[in-house]
Length: 370
Length: 124
Image: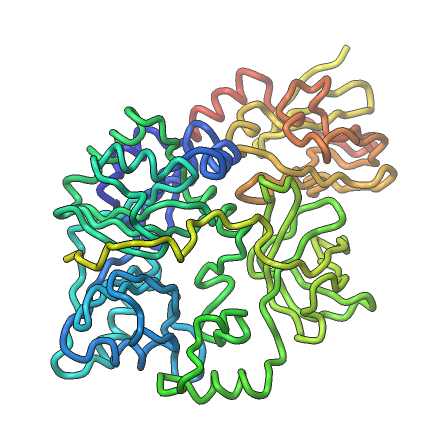
């Protein structure tokens, strides 16, 4: 029997398509359908249940140093309350998981990890945990993502708080309600961590009183694909380094004193033989994960790791890995879809312009949560 | 006189002499969700009974369409790749291909409307 989130009663009553994802029964889409849900997020506001993801805290003196040993990112100078997208690396420089870590205090960080990686991540972190640092799992919490241009206005009203002062990639709290201004859709928005018993009332209120459109995992997937955001287990995994995965921006320059750091540093210095790229189809069709990427001579140069229809662009888009010599934008390639060779070009990311709030927005909010 | 039959793979077919129109049932259309592309075979291509001859791409997955009869494709619905949602319409506009049955055909495993409805209810 698959696990359920606190919002399962709503999904069961309202989802038009449900299924298993990372061991949970999750909604794929509701009555409106994927395209309408996708559009609601781009134009108004949509609501996602992301409670299947793991919420954890790392606490103790020296926690920032510890995090800099399990991730390639720099957290030492990050402001309190600032969240960063990063990865956990393994000894081979591959990716254990991608995650968002928020520095709440010099001795306290909050992190959200992928549902399918929860147990692995926790075991991984615990196996490296130094004396004096503790890991806490917030199993009693749900996580709701409110995403879209109307998100700030709606959440401000719903919580009775002024969220215009909360900057992008910042976290604050209102009692037991922890609010982070971020998401995985490319739109402005928030991830709201609440106690499980508060989840359904908040979810229903956002839908019933503010007309927010509930969205399933299918729209979440098409939204992140348009932004070129990687999906763990597909676009990135234990065998892809952050450099191959085109995530070099998460890698700090100062040192390589983290797990697998020497491998990643060598990738930075010497380059990599393959790279994650975005592709836009020229020919009609849909190309999905697993499709082989060919050069003009028909030789295999890589494979897709994600792909589908972009509702915003009304065309097919994809991501995948190609040999580095084919990774430049506008390079023409072919996708072998059931024997048909569909023409595509390497595209620049994002496919759709990000509308996340500027990270430079002034904020007085500091990390107060938990 | 043509008649409408249904398959266990949720194809809807119209038999008109030796020409068989193949589409998908309303039930299948609803189950697929939002559609984004239909990949059609070439006119003149031949398929064995049970072979997949077209692919309907929804936002979530690719669904193959199977032919319940062997034969040669004589016409394809060219409107579908650009208007994939049209495949959910009635057979008059939502047909995918017309196939000329070869001599060795067997329609005994096809269902009529009542039998198909019972089949869907039983598998709901």
